[in-house]
Amino acid sequence: MTGLVVAMDGPSGSGKSSVSRGVARGLGLRYLDTGAMYRAMTWWMLRQGVDLDDPGAIGARCGEPLIVCGTDPDGPAIHVDGIDVAGPIRQAEVTGAVSAVAAVPEVRARLVALQREVIGSGGIVVEGRDIGTVVCPGAEVKIYLTASAEARAQRRSAELAGSTVQAQQEAMARRDTLDTTRKTDPLSMADGAVELDTTAMSLDEVIAEVLRLVAEHAGPSGPGGDRIRERT
Ligand SMILES: Nc1ncnc2c1ncn2[C@@H]1O[C@H](COP(=O)(O)OP(=O)(O)OP(=O)(O)O)[C@@H](O)[C@H]1O
Ligand SMILES: Nc1ccn([C@H]2C[C@H](O)[C@@H](COP(=O)(O)O)O2)c(=O)n1
Image (cartoon, rainbow, N blue to C red; front, side, top):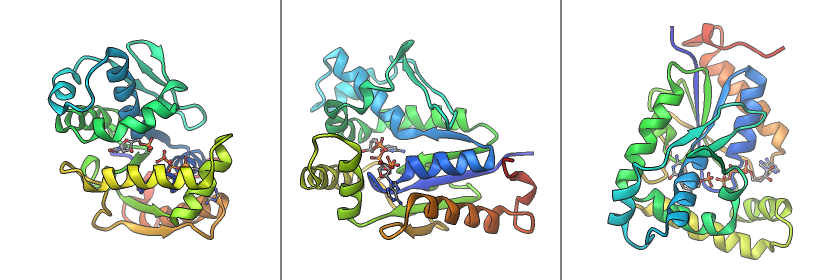
């Protein structure tokens, strides 16, 4: 029997990580942050001095780093060649460069294959930009999370000391443009996805709504209902 897969896509800062972790905890599922894998690849490229303006150079070297991504929603770990990069991949240098690396087809092919290995037979909430469209189009539940640009920037700047809402909004807009206009597997809403605009919702409300959608789409009376269990 295969396990439940919940696919969570959406633009930067829409709440994918926080919501996915809350849903995984609530259902006793694993959690995979695919953005962390693109960030880990970018961290490695920067460390190696690869020219990030040269997609050919990125594509030629993207098979080299060993990227290992954990699936514990309470402490998702990420290592590159045995080095813990959970902190470094969140730094501004990586955030500013990751969209260029993620646009390279060879990078996407390698990381999608790795993601599918981790997903295995399921029992997991997976978040990113192409989960419902490319990585796992057969996922039982597909969510497309959105929120207004202002709300997303406000949430992010509240999280990061010393950043203004305006600077955050500009940085997010830049990244979203790159992520939605790249040629290979751009961010888009998957067929069958439920769009959830969280602008006026608290994090707890969003998690509760996704749990409700999971129960509706994959609950005891829905398809695959025997595959979910509530964590006690
Ligand atoms: N509904 C919500 N209400 C208020 N704050 C929220 C809500 N959802 C998420 N947040 C907060 O917004 C910030 C961004 O959320 P999160 O990191 O989960 O977004 P993301 O979509 O994973 O972002 P990215 O794609 O950039 O990694 C976090 O500080 C999170 O706690
Ligand atoms: N499935 C994915 C996940 C992420 N990306 C790219 C696009 C993002 O700008 C970047 C970092 O993701 P984040 O940590 O902000 O969620 O990685 C992608 O193309 N596909």
